[in-house]
Amino acid sequence: MDKNRIQAVYDETSHRIVGRLMKDVDLFGGIKEVCAHFNVEAANFQCLGSLKYATYVQIERGDTEGAVRYSDKKVSQSAVELLSGTGFVGFDEAGELDIHFHGMLIDCDQQIDGGHFLAGENPVAVTIEFILFPLKGVHLQRGIDPHWSLPAFQFTEKE
Image 1 (cartoon, rainbow, N blue to C red):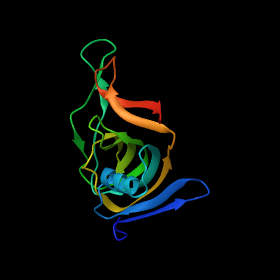
Image 2 (cartoon, rainbow, N blue to C red):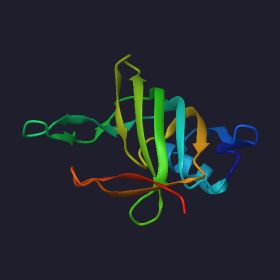
Image 3 (cartoon, helix red, strand yellow):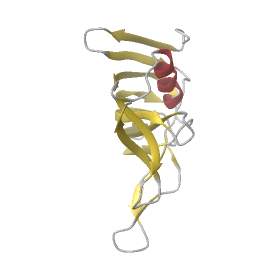
């Protein structure tokens, strides 16, 4: 882990990892890099800070009663402050580290927005500060949700 890009410290007392991602580090890529460095395979995390731009989708009404879907991809038109963000780290269907993250942001025009952030498209502007809560006895892996037929994290005990 490059200390000029990412600072992260494991706290032995609380068994948590705290740190920051620096300018130009991708939000998801940085968190995955921290997880790989500390051998974390499942975790919850929270963060705040600033992004050069945010890329996300939002839930919207579907075509039939009770149905929902995601919007087209949205990209902020300016840098944003990430007011609050929370996510989970687990594995995708192929066994690679994956992140599910939602955040609330405010842009340079003081417009508040937010949603389900997309991987690889959220570079840090100044800093993102985070706390990572490793889940040592939990296995998180995406599997198809039987109702929606979409990949969602499945929570099981680690064997």
